Length: 496
Image (tube, rainbow, N blue to C red; front, side, top):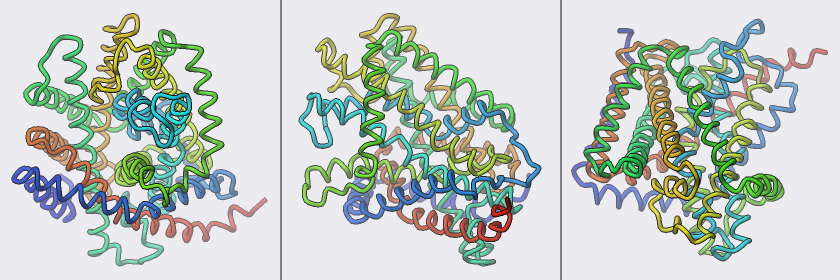
């Protein structure tokens, strides 16, 4: 096995302590993490809004700037993956299970359960629900991922550095990134990745269990979820062993085919014309209100502030916490693309695809609720999408596709994470040893199983949100280092 970095062992101890606390005192663990999360949302919400908006505006600047001509690699390098495979991989790693989990549930919640400002189940709430969902899963989310990935890819392929988060800060901190400072920075990245993916695996297992119960009557509970995680773990470890060019590429392409099939079925069998009208109108509302939503803190309306904490600020922290994992993966598969091509691909395409997805699933769910046949608003989040299917033709067939898609996303996320964790634990190696990837794969699945058993997934989710605060500082320094380094290339990009 290639040399394993000291960061691996330090992070392993930190992970074990956090999980151990969750197992020994789950109620206390959840109480402490919830209090810390709420304090951060109340005290630093303005900061999160400014940081994420800054990343979005910088992303737009890079698309239109002459800097956009710079290639992520040497001038003669060209992309390793086709445009379709590349977009499929970044989309699968960036959103994955979340699209299926929240596709119907989030717009429905904003409409019928907890609207941002409008009265529940009104036309105003309907429009607001779609606009807010587009906002949460749109440009700002992908700007966080994109700027993290761009910085990593630039230093990795243009400057010949390793694939570690810490080395991107060399223009700012010099050789100190090779010492304790680097260990701390990379440790944060690994910690956030392990818990972020373990949480997603837990939620994915819960939703797969709900779908199998809906279709085949399989009992909902820990034993079923344990079996699901065990089976999927074997599958993603097989994929991880096969390597980046085979396993993840094939899985990502499969994800896109299944997702497109499911999307087309919903558009065709749901309220087709209304879906297209809501998509078009909501895109307009999203763009029209983009600046206002980006800086909204509701300082004088406490009830609206609670909603912002629970949704917008939660998402902004979540995307930042996930950015080390998703950013490292996107960077790894983006060698050879120009900065302009990269930012358009990362920022625009997933945002549009997410908007189409939420327009289709959200509109269908809200119309199902309005018809009064099924009370989706009182359904558990993991069951919402399957209950929605029951009101459509071919419901069992569509549910089967949805379950396959969740499993495929599940495997892809875990596979991508094992690659990133292996890379971060072997001094940034672009080809981390398979043994190390398998170790991390087993650890991720084990954490998900343990926390499902003790009911600690919500507490773990809180930990990720808390971890976003220190990582946001690292993210700012990464962007500063990127622009410091880009200064050296200004002579090249100013040539006619």
